[in-house]
Length: 345
Image 1 (cartoon, rainbow, N blue to C red):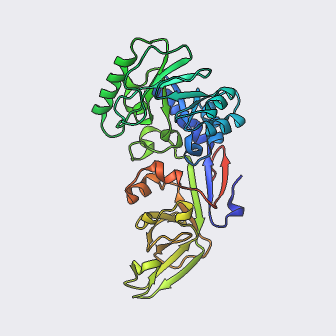
Image 2 (cartoon, helix red, strand yellow):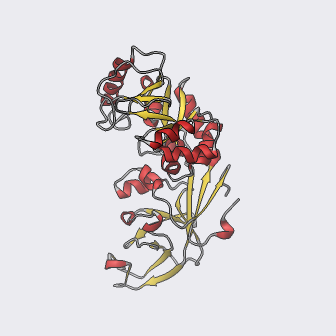
Image 3 (cartoon, rainbow, N blue to C red):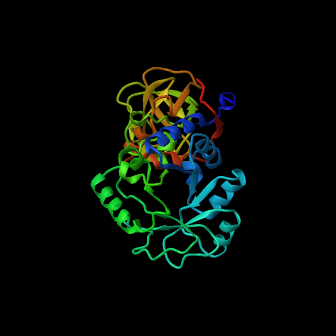
């Protein structure tokens, strides 16, 4: 399905074949450890069920979400696949998890009965986690922790891994997992029995660099069009606050997407592709539109690529001073969304 015929404001395309191939890259990197695909936050905005299914087809052995509610929704779509809830669960949600055959990450005592549990240890993240590990009850099937700096400070990550090894050495019968995407790709000693990989699955670099450096393919493509084209004369401006004032006769195009759709206000100065050519975003990004500077008059309805076709989410992240995770999870709201096994031209 193309989506081009229905293009109004914007179209999001999810390349599920790229998900499968990224999963295979991670499986190879893990060299025998299991890949557990993280599909929380609706699969980082890509669609949890579709991405989860494609990840399993690419070799993932389990899926990870944040809440029991996410797990229940995923279970309705995907039967027979192992699902681990990473966030805290209490009360009725524990019973719901048990009924749906979900597994729970538990970071405090007492350990709930009647459900498979992974005990989470504090090794340096400074969030959820047990400071000391008591002999685990029979329903504990895994031991886990969470790396804080695998993409930025390998020395600290290795200290966390050492603490994890010391804390869990007495329980070799339990599944151990601490690695994230960055550790799976860079720190072989972190892989243990399984690795919980998220960002790399979506073809985004955990290091903020070109994902192709690690053999990853971007999964999301976001496209719109020029809804209006006009020429500014010297001294004329575009957008709120007159933050862009033309110094010379300047053609601009208006794209009908804004921060309500996830194209953030701090994307001013980033680039998008207008008919395949890089053009700078100028002026203030509005709730439902932004302006691009053109080098000539271009027809209305000319295709604009916001992410994809060689334009990386990591580039927008650098412009906004954030990370690729935040960029893709904020893409939401009104766009038409299509999923496919491969993105066509």
